[in-house]
Every structure is written in structure tokens, then in C-alpha cells.
Length: 53
Image (cartoon, rainbow, N blue to C red):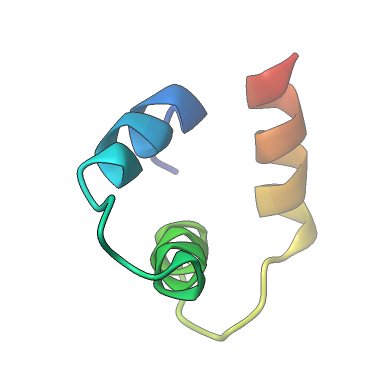
């Protein structure tokens, strides 16, 4: 599993300043939806929590 730093995503999203907030959220969701099933499974949720703390 690849690790993506939340800080890096936020920095990248700042480049998308003129984009609608909903489109930013969709983009971010797709980053974490690694298997493309439209859901974030528990391993992704756990990884997000661990990356924050």
C-alpha cells in the first residue's frame, strides 16, 4: 500500500483554487479509493487516522 501524506494533498489542492469545492472533494476521495469501488474501507480509514496522529 502506498502512503500519501495529507499535507501533500492539501498543498496540491491549493493549486486547484478556482475549482469548485465539490470537485476538490471528489478528487480527494478518488485518491483514497484505491480499488475504485466507490467506498473507503476500514484499512483506508485506519491509515488516515494513523497519518494524522
